[in-house]
Image (cartoon, rainbow, N blue to C red; front, side):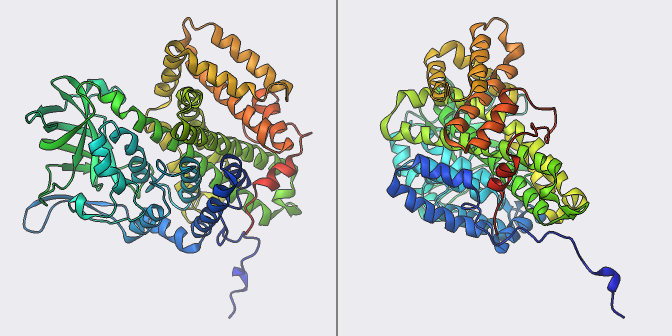
Length: 548
């Protein structure tokens, strides 16, 4: 007997077999905008290839398997020898191998490298976000190591290599390596100056032995780590390899892996150092200054990673609504659903546009040493990190709701996105840390505010709501007495004004109009889907749709 009652109808097909890069118009246009024509053509071809892979069923399958089979800690081998290894599913290695091969750890030495890498990171994160952690830290370790030219000469070619080699071996025997980071300790998270790990010097050659612990050590399977410890001269940055040059294991005891809300494919660990060999990076007592550029780079990656999660959530929501019928028509044609989708699309495009602008600023600093772009980054990175990562969770949650019950089911992929969404707001300094960092820059580095105001001022006169928001922001910034209690309000406003100015300059009129009316003009409710009905919402949604 035929199971006629089980005929499947009115279900959206999976969003698969598409180009994640080219179907994202805001991203593709941003790459064209920020790169010279010859570089843009080359980057477009590379990123489109990466985008097709990211949108394939194969890569999507890797992401599922890497999360369904999380890493496992093996402290000892079968004979009782301490090995402290972390085993990963083969899909994790496939994801990492493809990412490294696509240059996602190689930005610092090639023209337009930061824009190209940021775009690639945004594309590939949509296949699976967890393995982005070692990619990000490997990329970000380069500027920290440059504090010691000899170390940089030794390690940078391996860090920026396009070859991924799994397994622990002497770094000199590998064509490419990954880096992790260990800063936080049990007694305090972001307050790294309270660290208690001790570093005992071995003569005057820059070698030390470390003793202590790290409460959150990311990517413990990496080949080496940058860590902070208390040397005789104060808090200092050190390079800790997992395997020494003589092929012996450095003392790096993985006590346990964290059982995290999301980010399940990636390993985060508690580790202990016991007379662990390390090499000093930079001067004693200047550990924070040495590692700060690494932190700035990983913070920018938090912005890019959150933009990627938002983009994938929005793409899934619009795709579902374009194929799902309800109440006599297709969901995407219903005015209220169109309002919700457009509102989500605005948030996604604003995040992507801001992330690429910051990557372009980093390229300018690398290529010309631009003091204006460096000053802009000093304020804009923590402000963007604060705001964009904060917006990620509500965007993904609303996108999930667009799929209804289907979105709440693991097979849709949206629950994994939702579990991942708070991560970037917490890692590399949570919201309050970012807001206070912005205040610190405002109070101590007036040139940073000048650069920020010059950037947003490039759009002045183009939209009265943006002009009004800039004026209100200047009023807020004119009174910094007691500002700590309203720091989040100030930083939110800075991020929104910066996003609005970029969209007014570069986005289609319907996108800029809707953003300024809602985020800057106040014609907006407290939930998504409350945009003014007079806007061209259909055009906003169509622009954000991923065509298969």
